[in-house]
Amino acid sequence: MVRLLQKVKAKIYHFLYGPKRYRYLFEAILTLRARRIMEIGTWNGRRAEKMIVAAKQHRAASEIEYYGFDLFEQMTPEINRGELSKTPPTQAEVAARLQKTGAHVHLFEGFTHDTLPQVVGHLPKMDFIFIDGGHSLETIANDWQYAQELVDDQTVVIFDDYYFDRSDLGAKTMIEKIDPKKYQVEILPIRDRFKKEWGILSINFVRVTRRGS
Ligand SMILES: C[S@@+](CC[C@H](N)C(=O)[O-])C[C@H]1O[C@@H](n2cnc3c(N)ncnc32)[C@H](O)[C@@H]1O
Image (cartoon, rainbow, N blue to C red; front, side, top):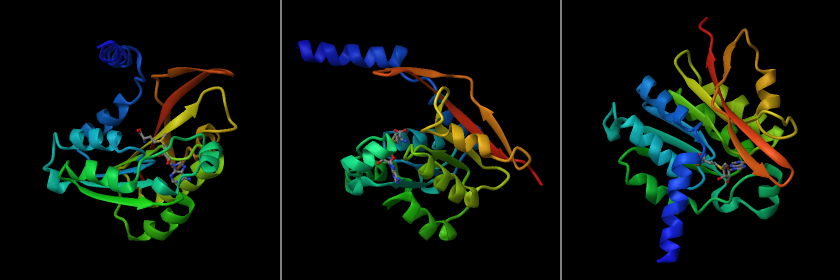
């Protein structure tokens, strides 16, 4: 009983004080009436599930395509440390969760420096891309390099992990290198803050769209 109460309390606390920036994902998907969604860093698939539910507001499930990239079973403690990441469940578990949505789900397992170059030439342009995989500078640069091949003038890209006060990890270094003549870059105003042992980690989302030619 005490445990149950603690769980309910944690849920309420998360609802009231949990990360707020995620609402931008759903706003973008609804505004775009997105059909093709790509997520780099699918993790447990819960965010993907919510993004598909948002897309279903405007489209039949059978029209929606989800493309998810993750290490899944290939994640190791060492990679996890280098990517400042999270440990994902198995690909089969995530696939089972996402298949229930009725959308067409495509999951790609492995390091994105291997998987993205292999598949990107075979994928369609995306309506919405969420970049939230590894947090090392190299991985984020790689993920953006290949994501750009799937962007057209309608695509919205959202980067997670713009760490306001840190350039050694996360998206900030990459974002500062994006050519403003080619892309419109907007640091979205909601900032979530997390207490870490070394101080406060402040995180924004960044929205990137291609400038029309
Ligand atoms: C922060 S979690 C993603 C969270 C998810 N997007 C969400 O909103 O719930 C990061 C995920 O990226 C994956 N990942 C980390 N580094 C990666 C890499 N180099 N290549 C592929 N996946 C990676 C991890 O396995 C982890 O599941």
